Image 1: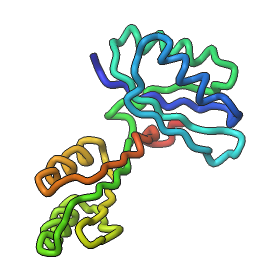
Image 2 (image 1 turned 120 degrees about the horizontal axis):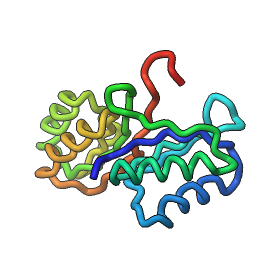
Image 3 (image 1 turned 90 degrees about the vertical axis):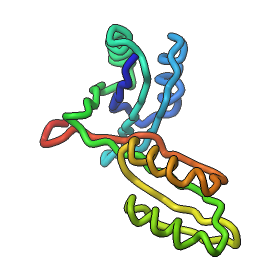
Length: 161
């Protein structure tokens, strides 16, 4: 199975998220990541959906999505033709003596320390999913307290839309 990232432009109306996610889950596929937000046009939203499936299945899902009344367009965000990013905030157990190490690791990944508590720090990072995964793995030994990820968002490269 392969990871597919679909960018779905939809009408910004009540219930569209439920209808679209239900369409996919009713077919027995798990949505790995789903982000939705209003676009530059307040009447439209963009959904970025990540699922793992076979090529024949993604074509079926795509065709079913295109049949939906509220769907304007469906495109696959292929890795070489698009830019995708994910946002993560990681709360790390960090005693005062470990903070320099956390700050150093954050610097390598171009992450930002956004909060410092008595025994923890929150670091935020934006980048490709592989960068997010690598950062989480490198700070795991310090003790992960909490991790929250936004899910993938993306756009096609160049003037194509």
